[in-house]
Image 1 (spheres, helix red, strand yellow):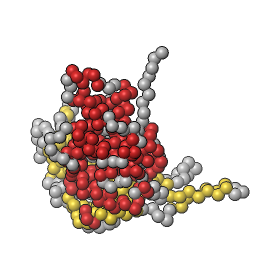
Image 2 (image 1 turned 90 degrees about the vertical axis):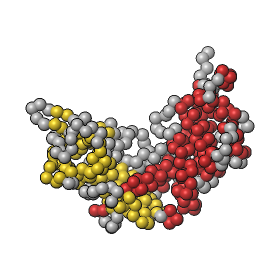
Image 3 (image 1 turned 180 degrees about the vertical axis):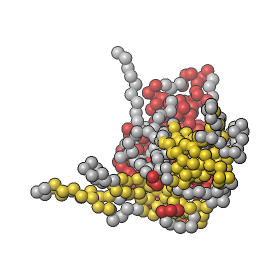
Image 4 (image 1 turned 30 degrees about the vertical axis):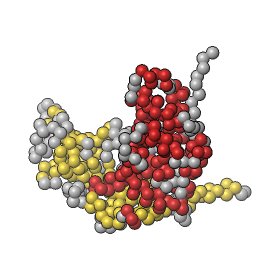
Length: 428
C-alpha cells in the first residue's frame, strides 16, 4: 500500500522508541498498534513529564522511530495505565492522528500542499487503466504488459483553490517462480493552490470522499492516505496518514458496469459537477451525510433507512428550497414535481409516493393510533425504501449537475444494486 503503510483500520504493530519533542532524552520503548480499528501506543515505561494519573489528558505531540520510519502522533489521549510487578508503570495513549515519515511539531503550524486518497473503487469509477495487457494468440501464446500512455486525468477547480488528479500508484511485484506483475492502487489527489493547515486539508479530503461516494454509488472507503508537506514535490515530502477507522472488509470493488455515475459519463462536465459540489456542499452536506449513512456495506435495519432517507429529503428541501414551516408531504411533492414525470415513473414512483413516504415515516417518528392503518412492513416497506433511496440519490446528484437521465439510466442498468425489489413470501 501507499508509502509502505498498512491498510487503514487493519491490525499492525510497530515497536520502537518514543519521546516528547521538548524532552528528547526521555525516550521509552513502546508499541504503536491498531486492533479492531483502534489506535494505541503502549510504553514499557512512562514519560516523566506526564502524570499517568491524569486520564484523558491530551498530549499535543509525541515523536517516535519504529520499523525504520519516523512517526508523529498528534493529540494523543492518555488512557488507563498498566502496572507490572515487579516493574514499572506502562503508559497508554489512544485516539491520535499519526503521520508516518516525518517529525512535525504543532499541527497548527505545519502547512500542506496536497493530499492523496487511495481506494479500490476509484479504479472502476475513473476507468483509468495504468497497465495494459497485450495478448497474442498466434502460433504460440504470448502475454505481455505495458504502461498505458494515458495514466491520469486532471480536473482544474481554480475557483475553489485546488485541482483534482486521478490516477494510480503502480509498483512492480515480482517473486521469482511465483509471481510476476504489478501492484496498482487507484488514487485521487487534491492539490491546493495555496498551502493549507492540517485540519483544513482533512476537511477538504472528507468533502471529496462525500461527493465520490455519491457518484460511485457506495460509500468510498479509503484504504490509505498520504499528505504532502508544503515546499516540494519530491517523494520525501509525502508522508503517510493513519487514523482510527473501521476494520477493512473483504468486499470486492464494484465492477466498472456497476458504478453508478462513472467518470466517462460526466467526462465533458466533470469540472462543473465537482465545482458545483464544492460550492453547494455547505447547504447539502447534512442531507448527503444522512443518505451516505444508508449506503454502507452492512445494511441498516429497514426502519432506520426509512427515517434517515426521509430526513435527508426534508433537510435538503429546507436548506435549498424553503426554510419555512411547510409540511414534509409538501416538500416531497415539490421535489418530485421538479423532475420529468416519466423519469420518476421509471422508479415506480407515482402520485401516491409523497403520502406513502410521509405515512411510513410518521409511523416510526410521529406515531398515533391512526398510523396503524397505514403501517407498512416486510416487502412493502423494503420496496418503498428502495424507491425512496433511488429518489434521494436522484435529488442529490442532479443538484450538483449530473444529468437526471444519466442517473436514471445507470440506476436501471444495475437495479440489483440501486433499485432492488423485494418479493413477499407467501406460505401455502
